[in-house]
Length: 228
Image (cartoon, rainbow, N blue to C red; front, side):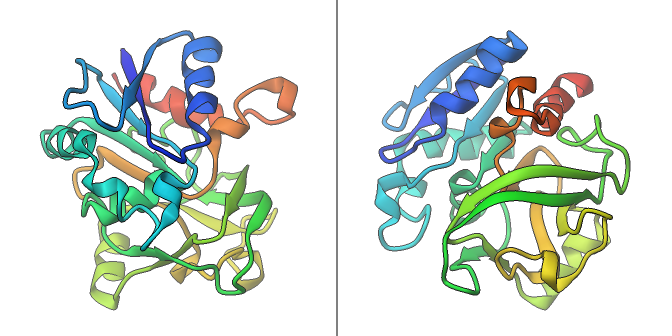
């Protein structure tokens, strides 16, 4: 399986994702440049975290028009697997590959710490290495991670089990206090209707090695292999 990690101007988690895939998991992994017009036969595309194009206008709004995104959108619409992490999640929403929008954190502060998440659906390409309702810990680092969607969109996400991760406390309780950014329904990660596109605000690439004291994030990448 071949992974491609997209490099946008201002990205800062591209090498982290590349390291996990190439050196920790040991799978074929290449970088894709934002001006590229081909995905070079990649089976999975990663849109990494960071501040693409300085996050001017809106987070992900400029990156959405990068030449590579035309290919990513076509790839996703044909069933290709795409994962957007943090800024990558924002880009997926701007590209209409995922519904809703990421706005400024409710307290207007940059939040950077470990968060607890509850796995709402473990029957997807991205979560099948977890148990249903399992509580995991993955770090966040964002200033605009407040997910919002209208009532109809939220109902569709819930009815079709497209909410994959929710912020929770260490015991798995979904509470306002466990929500680090004000996201509606404590949403931390969602997928599209066909469940081949996944966006999440937490950073799995930052907890994918035992030396970091946490390997919960590794299971997200391993879930992709477990499906194929």
